[in-house]
Image (cartoon, helix red, strand yellow):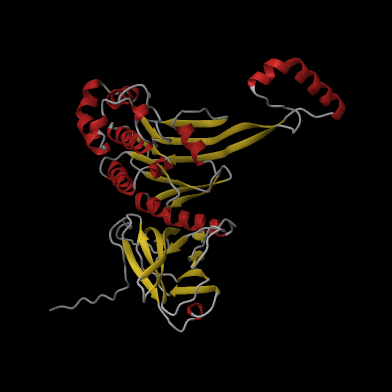
Length: 425
């Protein structure tokens, strides 16, 4: 048995929600309050008596309820769930930002958390001063911080702005410096929320690599919350799935992801969908959507996928051509599909026409993708419409386990089936 670095027992967090009754409160500008205060109070009192308006009611809401788990030193744990499942509340409790209503949390070691932009930074202090401030909060000496200082600055790429107050930083600069400080000042536990989505794709990739090193090479514990299933799959082997403030599943990441995606299927929210503005005129794409294998913009490698487009045609032309590209998160075109048929009905008639492109086995490697479309006239080489960043979708490998080692992000962009033979020469 391991000695857990984090032990959570019957954890619960309750909030009080105030429901205001319409008509009970009146909101006015300050000048109106000063001029009409007596009249305002008297009027509301009479309304209260006449209409018998009940005061605001209160509701008790459990953001977390009866949550228990243990985490061993050096584990990388994913925490996933839909919005409102209790992920951020759990991280705030573990980071000691708020206190639990009931239950107990036992933590052995220093905790560095990155929950939102600017967490732990003093806006009036410079980047340099905030590095030393955060290190001091973690209980490190000035000598220890100085040893890591150059490494932090190099990782964050903010050397030019090191002596500028962080209140002048962009959100991306905030996140780069905050993550660099949290990851390099050697806390025993690193807690990272979805805040990394603020950074650019190259920095997100670097952060995922660093968190992987923190867990596997440096033997520290990482708790990672993300809506990116490919990122969770890459970084973690164990995952906690929260639903309605309670643990729905705690175990292997691929199984947790499957349960999460299965739950997403029941949602009516539109994903991987585009709708043209209602006032748009001329030949254009009226709407576009992708039917992914798992629904809700999640696709499993090797499964069938359908791309659908509705063309609104006001000026038919026999040389009309439609094509689209699948583009990765680094804005690199991965593949392209053309449709050029002079006999197609939209080349000769006005109206709305549905185009459906099915790929029987999409073998794009796990990652985040969008599509780019072109509608053009080939004879005149005229582009009528070019749309980018449409219908975001994500490819995962959650149904395909690899016993030798886990799938790694950015190993490739395309992965095909293959038959191997080993012969003795």
